[in-house]
Length: 438
View: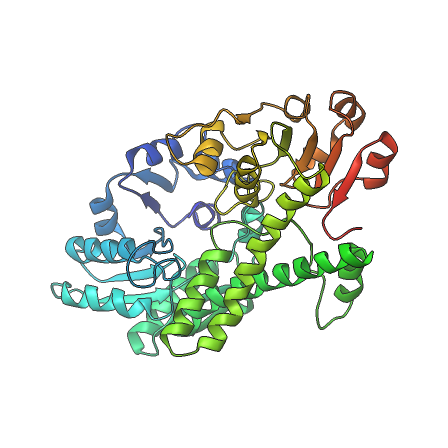
């Protein structure tokens, strides 16, 4: 919404939410989300044609186009628990729109949702329309956290799905005209509703599949003496494969990949495709295995015990340049190490200490073995091992000679993102282990 406001100054954009604290944060000097470049975009547009408000009803009444961007978490109860998307918030928003709409509206699905969700929204709107006309479009986002602003400025594509009706096509072209303020028309793809909804799930599934594929090969590289970066480079030169998303690591995280794959698994099962469901489910299983394999390697390397040993975990966000910790590999690694009775000291430059504790232990819980440091040097002081779990650039610039001098000997480094200069670390005296390298 901030980018639309920036690129289309003639359009008034209102972001509304019932959560007053969240809206207050968006109106403050410290935004609730860390994303490079976002602060500048919001500062340029806020108060001009971008407004943040708790006036949900007023926002609905004033809008011609309503983007539905609510959370669609994986269900943790009932039918489809652990796989299906929980659509309670989607339904709630649809009912709220129908209740307060004062004329025709274009409703745009922005949340990541299962295919055919538009049917649910249309049914609710039609049953409660009070004579108003609604058109439902699908416009999934394909942003990558950490590069979201750049992705919005020059997107690979904008995808918009609409019904093959006269009204549906008019609505579709209306939304196309919004993006056309800055996105070349040839990069705006239009499809039917169901193709658009499914494309988001499939795109994330394919990206996650590549990561799990190279991570499975990283284990084979460690067993055979091959170097996973060299293997990835060699196969990435094949134009049929390409180099992207072939970076081996401790595992993928974030709000999308696992949730969307599990949603795809549930859909396949629902439509009687168990073999397809099993195929995609193994992408998630491989990712979970990679996280636990990394923690197990730490334990094995430290003479098969980390009990009462100090392990410094560098990075907690699921990737660099974001403060998002959802499904972060660091959560699994920290839990596994705590289960082995290690003393775990975590440092991340953007994630607050309370959030780290809540993610690892649960809200309101504490464990004296889990501590949060304010710098990498503080975390590493007196440690037996150092584990890099997020690829923050600052970790590449650390004075590892200084760190080595303050650690217990032998001192270990486990590079879960393959970002460190391993020969240099070995020369200092570290015992080094990296993903997919013998």
